[in-house]
Length: 455
Ligand SMILES: *[C@@H]1O[C@H](CO)[C@@H](O)[C@H](O)[C@H]1NC(C)=O
Ligand SMILES: *[C@@H]1O[C@H](CO)[C@@H](O)[C@H](O)[C@H]1NC(C)=O
Ligand SMILES: *[C@@H]1O[C@H](CO)[C@@H](O)[C@H](O)[C@H]1NC(C)=O
Ligand SMILES: *[C@@H]1O[C@H](CO)[C@@H](O)[C@H](O)[C@H]1NC(C)=O
Ligand SMILES: *[C@@H]1O[C@H](CO)[C@@H](O)[C@H](O)[C@H]1NC(C)=O
Ligand SMILES: *[C@@H]1O[C@H](CO)[C@@H](O)[C@H](O)[C@H]1NC(C)=O
Ligand SMILES: *[C@@H]1O[C@H](CO)[C@@H](O)[C@H](O)[C@H]1NC(C)=O
Ligand SMILES: *[C@@H]1O[C@H](CO)[C@@H](O)[C@H](O)[C@H]1NC(C)=O
Ligand SMILES: CC(=O)N[C@H]1CO[C@H](CO)[C@@H](O)[C@@H]1O
Image (cartoon, rainbow, N blue to C red; front, top):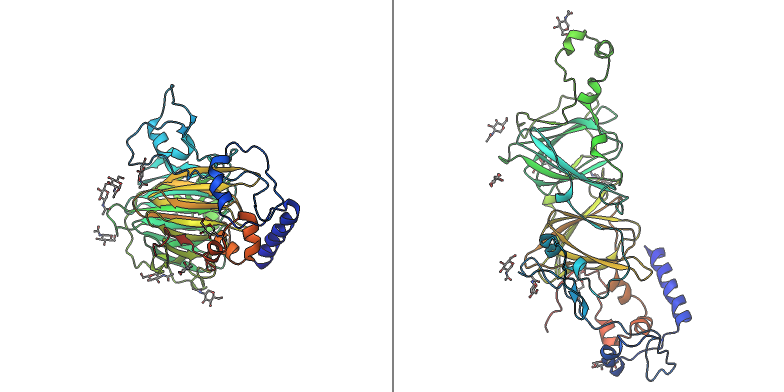
């Protein structure tokens, strides 16, 4: 992080010499900017430090609020101020209502990014007796190269069968409780019941099963995340699929029994199938090798979140959930009117999942490109490595979402903290802010920031 900060600061110093923006003391220039910003086509490049102006036009003063939301009963139109016009053709009003910043983008948006929103509602569900599954990978979201997601539902007692796969598996329980089992490469075993808001993690290739308990009459639903954008849940290695594709002579020889012992094995894989709910306190057979030394589940729901001015945050990565070396998570709540602060993740892409509320996010892609997306509960978001972004609560209820990373550590860089800890004259030279404004920037990460305190 220090070397990263150093390289950013170095770039800042270099750009100051090249562009040579005059030092500002704010005031009248800023006041005139609203009237001149649209018409000023060229740099005004003054060299006088006493009447400073930047070498490019000022940014527009338009606050660029979202133009509508779920509570607004209007027909959304691609109109913002004097720009745009009504839709004359057919219109999917429900989708337009959910995406004000695609239909009528803020004027600060520029260029186009790859699609960074995928509602699980648009994924084809695979229905089984006992549950269902739907997934998102690079086929749905080409931008999401580092991780893929699966939403899975099991009725009380239903089983996602014994299986394994090439990637690690990380999970967040959304509803009900799930009993997990596993045996590792050393013959050590593990069984646990994982409750809402808790996590599990299986290292790559380690076999496991998932079963809904009857803690809830409706069974369980959970979010699975895999540290590979090309993960495909159809490509998992299933116990029954394998057994159905081995000559029975070989099976009998392997288990040192006769063929008729395997008379009733399924001739086709099961994937998800109904079962009897397991008691919470199920114990696996005693292994001569013992149990898995670092638990495959983590009581994340029991972690007390850190309070910030606009909400809360809590983190689970390999520093606390030791085995989870390829996935890190932050669970964030944002109060109405507040936002997850402007930040980026230095070496990690972010796969996001919205649990409740509504949000807007502008993704800054460098080279003058930025695009704003709106999210609802059940949506997936994706922010490539180091792309600047924020997450604003656009509703009147709590926004709750997960930031998930293909990483052993959670890391972020805060814009406010960066500017608070940079020599103020340098910040003033770039942004023409008053010393008082800069002095108000928080040297500690705000993380989730509320509206300005009225004092
Ligand atoms: C929803 O949008 C309307 C304007 O279209 C605005 O008055 C209202 O405050 C918005 N609601 C929230 C929760 O932001
Ligand atoms: C919050 O939004 C709901 C609809 O989503 C609306 O019925 C309710 O009036 C809003 N409450 C406030 C205080 O704006
Ligand atoms: C079970 O699901 C039904 C139908 O979705 C719902 O009405 C009920 O509240 C759920 N019960 C529990 C305990 O979650
Ligand atoms: C085959 O094995 C099963 C279980 O080990 C046993 O019950 C059965 O009697 C055996 N059958 C024959 C034909 O050996
Ligand atoms: C839940 O499952 C356990 C174990 O199968 C069983 O003993 C218990 O009666 C069940 N409870 C309910 C409410 O179905
Ligand atoms: C996690 O690792 C740390 C450091 O190696 C160790 O002290 C701790 O006991 C481990 N925790 C668990 C639950 O295994
Ligand atoms: C999680 O909490 C349960 C009790 O709610 C406890 O039995 C279990 O050991 C805990 N699991 C871990 C991994 O700490
Ligand atoms: C700065 O942010 C921290 C949270 O990281 C908060 O506790 C503190 O009150 C903030 N300071 C100011 C001056 O807002
Ligand atoms: C340093 C400086 O000139 N600060 C001024 C910035 O603008 C505000 C409002 O116009 C003034 O109150 C400050 O004195």
